[in-house]
Length: 113
Image 1 (cartoon, rainbow, N blue to C red):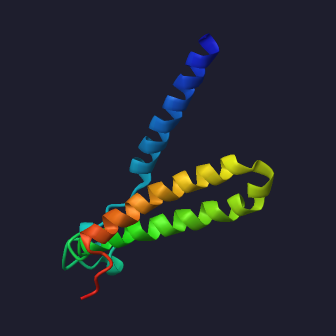
Image 2 (cartoon, helix red, strand yellow):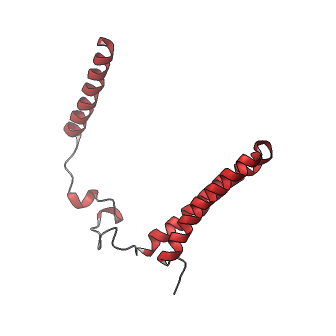
Image 3 (tube, one colour):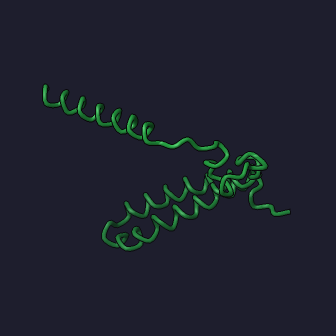
């Protein structure tokens, strides 16, 4: 127990020491020069405001098809060895994905007009 507590204290002291060292060695920078956008230029709009809400539904649709393909390929390799239980489980998985695709369809992500 003492070894565990001393290890935790050593880790905490190391973290505090690294933070203190980094703030002691840091040079003062202008706030605009450290922004991660366009080499320090101020952004013209908020990062979230430029994406329409429709793209979130498109993302759900992409993830549904992506997860389907990720799990279908290994399943196709072992389905003969596993038998009918593997087929039932895969159709259950596909039903869950179909619920996601139905939600996206209802939200209008498949309409491009």
